[in-house]
Amino acid sequence: MKLQGRTAVITGSSKGIGKAIAELFASEGAQLVITGTSMESAQETVNEIIAKYNCEAVPVALDVSRVESCEALIKTSLDNFSKIDILVNNAGITRDNLVLKIKETEWDEVIAVNLKGVFNCIKAVSKPMFRQKYGRILNITSVIGQIGNAGQINYSASKGGIITITKTCAKEFASRNILVNAIAPGFISTSMTDKLTEERKQTMVSAIPLRRFGEAIDVARAALFLVCDDSSYITGHILSVNGGLYM
Ligand code: NAP
Image (cartoon, rainbow, N blue to C red; front, top):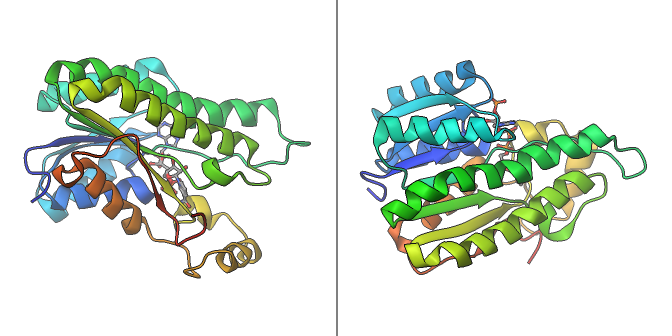
């Protein structure tokens, strides 16, 4: 088992990509902190994962855009497991609109959750990880942060920012044996992409060399690689999981 004895905090793990990461980590022996925006959504996933993998897991209600909420997440994790080996910054939202039409609130919400949320969680976990002299931080960015997308100025800016956060933290944290990497998924079938019209999905699929959307497990497998000992000489890397959409 690749994560035996490791404790992993995964933001936005009540569903979608975060839940797939949590399940794979549980199957590899990790203890988990599962978060949703409500205690109910986190608890439901915890119950499911414990029943399936007989692992230790605790639920936390989290709003990554609020500093106090992220600090409370790290405190609860330490209270339960005494250490945090792995932080996966996965929580994210979309509020798509064209530049001409986008509202200030749509810009602010996406930047607050996707970009400031990553900063908040990294800042909160940095002290305990520095003390431990061990850590793996994995940020979930997006192909849209690499290539941009019409109708997603807020989302693309937030995801582009995560790429530079990843490289900056990789440089600052390396001396403490804390590795910081990111995954840039392409289009993955989750509730986030379920919102797209069939027509838009088809247009996107035709631009993907592998001619299909990815599955959450495709991202989870890459996540496992980047947090386990197989990748102990990799830091500051942005791993594409995108079916060839961007090379
Ligand atoms: P999803 O199914 O919509 O799940 C989003 C998760 O984030 C949920 O657990 C949700 O909690 C949580 N969340 C939402 N707002 C939050 C907040 N303010 N504070 C804390 N948690 C919050 O999305 P997904 O498709 O799995 O996406 C996961 C990550 O991958 C995101 O960062 C997304 O940008 C990125 N990504 C996705 C794709 C894709 O095609 N799906 C592609 C590239 C990158 P609740 O369920 O409790 O509300």
